[in-house]
Amino acid sequence: LTGNFKHIILEERIAKNAALFIQFKNDPYAPMRSVKGLSRYFESPTIISLDLSHHIKGHQHSAWIQSPSEVIQHITLWLNMQDKNLDFRSEQHEEEILELCE
Image (cartoon, rainbow, N blue to C red):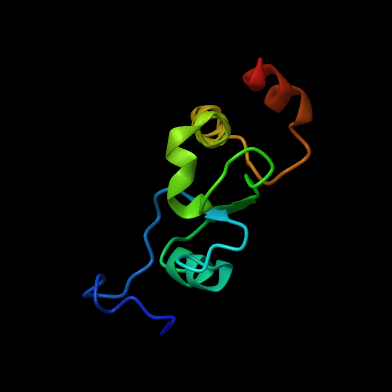
């Protein structure tokens, strides 16, 4: 693991668009260090770490696709919050977040 992405990012610059990164706990293929390294190419990235081992058998890096509901729920919530200009990482919008989850 090199911690750089020169093999996929030819010109280093900071993107201003929103970005969601989902990292799976104990994932050796995409450890948090690498996810954070890639996220630095975005001005305000959102990074979440999920532990799906309680209901998914196999390696979370790819096994989640067989039971994607929790991942889809997080992506949907993040997208809905983007539409409403709410910060996914903030607790100040707790009521709006709960409404979006319903």
